[in-house]
Length: 328
Image 1 (cartoon, rainbow, N blue to C red):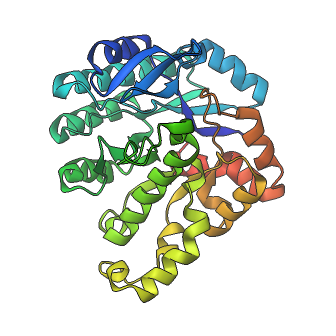
Image 2: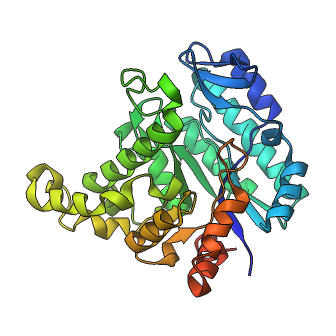
């Protein structure tokens, strides 16, 4: 039985250099007070950089140590959402070419999610078509794109193209809209709280907007166990039942749609994973992920929690669900 990691990241040296040169004023690459090289967002530390993020050979060795057979790799935030259309499109193309190159080096171990310049629909669709030909297994998008909702009409041509290709989409959080106003620069609140809020809001908005009914071929993967969606499933249904605005565009309860999307197993408590599987409707909608090589990534620990599910449930989450979803 293969172990397939659907939530794991890499960056590239050329992409990082482009971010250094063109990320301002929103993003900067510099050292923290503790001396750690990091990406800063609006002057606050946002993402710590580690050598593992650029070293595919080391990645394979660490996969071997943890018992992971195949990784479906994605870029991470801030993706390619900076620098204007030409720079953004170039950054996406650079990362997709790097991913293609590494898959060619490790054809039994690597697949990849395409990076797109989402702010520019024409360029994004062109890069998507190019990436599909190059072998992309899916698409990566952050839960908001430069503080715009994923249901914004400007993204419709991109969703139409993804729907046409029938590709899985990893919806991964970034700093939520209004993070500065909420004081999330204090205590490093974006990763533990802001990320979970960002995914939850994006998917809940898709559900209430009727988005998942319009795009019938979409295969959405909600990162980090769906954020707080499993915990809020009953509340979403109750609001749909009692608040007219929550039933304006959908007739079925939100829990119906929560069983139509997919989730990764990047949670840090087995009880949270149990709840995720329950709300998803079973392990056929949940897949192993590690969040490697971020500083809170846990390749071995996430796999241990999946193994603790036991039997057919563990087998499906470790690999069978991903094999079916990605056609592996």
